[in-house]
Amino acid sequence: MTAPDELVAVATRLAAAGLSPGSTGNLSVRVGDELICSPTGSRLADLAEAGLSVVSLAGEHRGGPRPTKETAMHRAMLLADDSLRAVVHLHSSFAAAFSCLPDLDPDDAIPALTPYLAMKGGPVKLIDYFTPGDAAIFAPIHASTIAGHHALLLAHHGSLVAGRTLSEAEEIAVELEEAAKMALITRGAGVRPLSAVALDELAAMRRRRLATAPPS
Figure 1 (cartoon, rainbow, N blue to C red):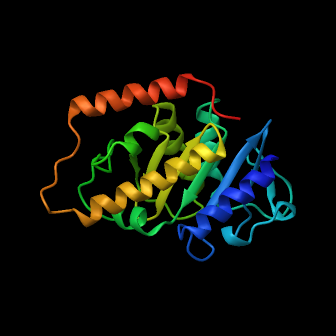
Figure 2 (cartoon, one colour):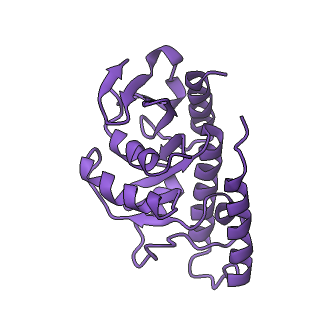
Figure 3 (cartoon, rainbow, N blue to C red):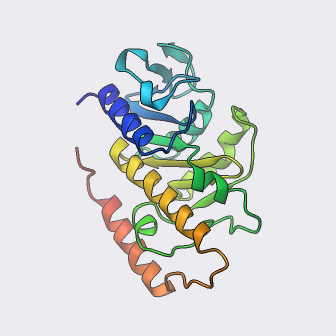
């Protein structure tokens, strides 16, 4: 499967799962020194290989329709870590709602109630609010990714995750949404997060996973 084919397939699955309402959300995959990404104003459910955008890692528009106005977020993650090859940004309901709550831990925004997000994406970094399309968001996202955060929660906005493959980024995005959903529906119920020992074990599992070659 080519990179454009895979991008369309992942976009279709995310849309079918109800994670990209309307024309929200955008995806990208790195091929050489270019990003293939969804165009501005597009619906993930309607993407086609022939209608994708191509931009350079520096942000230059090289082909196809005008790219998503949030390209800076994708470039920030991919330029921060050469092992990353794909980015998924969603305005999914639970992640967006959770991002509006006060007093979130900026370095671990979504409590770990189950193992899966911690194991696949690691602790979720909270990024302060920026107007959609504001290129200034590049700096905090780039710095957070350099620090090892591959799963981010954008305040009053949604989620942004990166992976070594599109399917890996898709998995992390889905787990982040599920974790936000669980955290919201149990908020105030006195639930117990995973213990520090459990989180250490999951972090070790994630490190081992990242040390192995991603599935082709």
